[in-house]
Length: 385
Figure: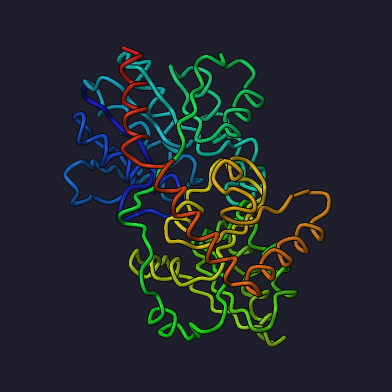
């Protein structure tokens, strides 16, 4: 079988969970089928990858128009594959056009839904209406929709009522538990000015409203003073969001809290060290269909404190592998108090945090493997032929 994976992100240009998903899915599928990855941007050395730039004539245009120009190039180049599989709205239109042009079955994975992320209008301006349109056209016509969690499936069917429920399939994200495993991270902490003998609270994610970083920084005002907050926060959606983060971090530091902010994308080896050395990994997302980064933390034997939204409760077992905090958009202060209380509970009881970390590793190994994800995905492809 010839499979065309369509994605904005592909290594080395990966900044979010969708990119991580495509990276590992491509690797596993390539062991079972003939795979090409059609991605955005600069040329890659990876033999699977075919990269496409946006049109130069659109350099000064709204970014969504540049995205659509890349989609056109991808659609023109995937004739002859047996199935196209698109990831996120950035590549969905390319998959839809391939379906129309060549009659190729189109599978799309919903990592998130544009109508449920209204804050994207801050980043895209009028392009947000374009991104919503591109996603709607694709999801309503796709031969199959993959939801990365049961929560995501519910959101798809609620948001797009014209979609036949029989076409929406739950296939969870996976984790490579040989790569994401506990390592000695003490030296990595020291190099960044952190004390490995004190509790470390770790956040890894984009600077986006969705990721709840503002709530985390408010909650951190109530963290125990012995705790150290390590923010691996990069790729701001807007300059305003970056400015908000910088101001909040500076205020915490002025108030005597220990905060280290790494604004660049963290290299994989250093990320593994941080995930392993942290006392608690915190995921304060206000919208999260799955949250692959929680799996990464669990695989590294670190307890997780996370918001109980979307697909997160399908990954983090409350009271066993971490603590879940209810999120209510109408009461952000309550959510922030809950985050602070959960983090403090585990930084004060490191034996409990360690036990949750070990349970998280067992859960990641036992239930979320990439070979399983690839087999389920390939079976879905075959069902469409």
